[in-house]
Image (cartoon, rainbow, N blue to C red):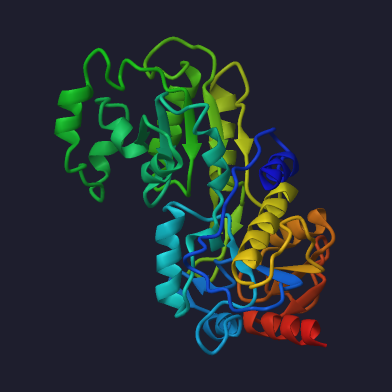
Length: 376
């Protein structure tokens, strides 16, 4: 209960007052073989630091293996702190394990949409819409939402809501779209239920459709085609303007989508768009990561450890100065920021606006620095 109170009091968003739900390390996953609790922990960004697409970069496989002993038991507490998402944490952990060649627990994966879990109680039985690549509706369902539809599912109930649909040859009809329309298109179906909240889980796959449908939902009180009414709640998992993908140049992220939506909405409707954004660089995200790392530390040591005992150092390894480094700087001690040159940042010197505590070429160099520093 003491840890729960800490999590609730320490995790207040800059733009809202929703605390994070606790994440507890799966004690069945970790072996208790470390006699002394670690005095430091590491948080890794994923895209542009560990992976580019699905390809490990910067010696990430070797770097992570150094955090385990010869038997494959975790000896240094670490977690992935990413603004990305779109799939449940358990699935992402399995994907990362396969790509990186080390065992990774779901408790080590902190994705941008994790704070939405706290909102499940508030919207548990209300109709909500989930937007983004991957499996956005499954993410919310596993968080405890009972009445959630993906944007693909939701739009399938409204004929002609997307005026460009007939030109999108790349789109495929959902396998059970006709069944859904037949079963739920009546009085109690999505067409007659007010959408109470919209959650942007991950990057939008179809900007034109999603902006159009969001304007319909948000301007009518959750009943597309109806009269102008009060806006339902709108939540973004992050506000990243760009990220480093497989293409050499940066790609537009969720923050760019938010800007586009806000610009259109505010130009068309009388009341400005109201929304809440989560994710890095919000300092509360880093406090939540510290609590997760504390849980992991307790799971890998043989000695009783006080959950409230502080780390001497927490290292944030990222590639985006305005997100990873800015967030670690705002979180302050014991956070120490390390900026890599394998993603968004490619500069020779430190970033001028958000300078890191250390700049390295790769994540392998970052881990080498940390281990040498902590062993000295």
